[in-house]
Length: 263
Image (cartoon, rainbow, N blue to C red; front, top):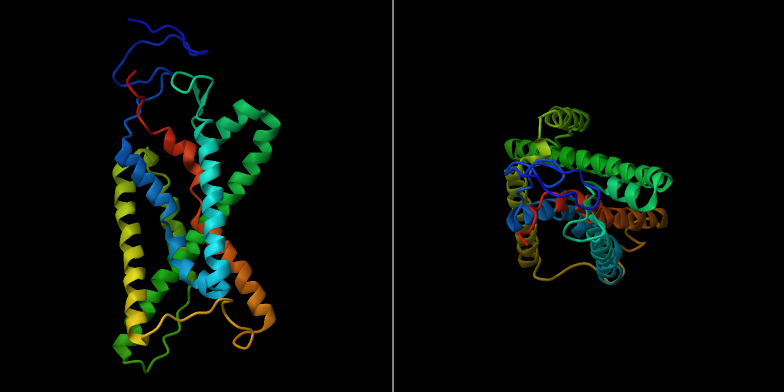
């Protein structure tokens, strides 16, 4: 049996292994898609949000969170509409963000947006490498301090950890069909919730120990740091918050894992 051509697709044989465009059949569900989204949103960037709020204060910090989350929500709605051209059910699929830009806006826009997207992904990769190295350094230093009873300052060189993390990423990226490994996002989602709850409970424990919630409306005061350090701290805080909301740039790729609805 042969399907009729739909919106420019060539006629393809029916198969339980392939979609109507000849690509391997998508098998994503609500649960796997949710795992991908949680993994992307609740990434390591969430661990720096407490520090960012402390730098900017209880007024600017939450406002910045709302602004960046609103931008992510709005761009996600727009991108979700770009997944298929024409008909939302049977229109031609865009398999990635770059495919959508190419097919909707043209080649020139695709080149410009490609530079922006890959720069963003490059920056995110650097951010994850640094965050991973800092986390491993913190574990090593904590073990060192406990073993020495606090007598050894335990200086840690971060270069080996960053290099090791980078090498491991290069190795893992060579695994065939690695992006289609659905259980990986489920494991990552569990890890995301785990370290988020660890951070939450540590904060609660610290509040119980101090007997009060510290911080201020304006963040770190000039008396504590210099004006230059205050300015750079605020800029870095905005960067941390933006880094924590990096979901929309991979939304179409996640959407392309969802199996076609039955109509």
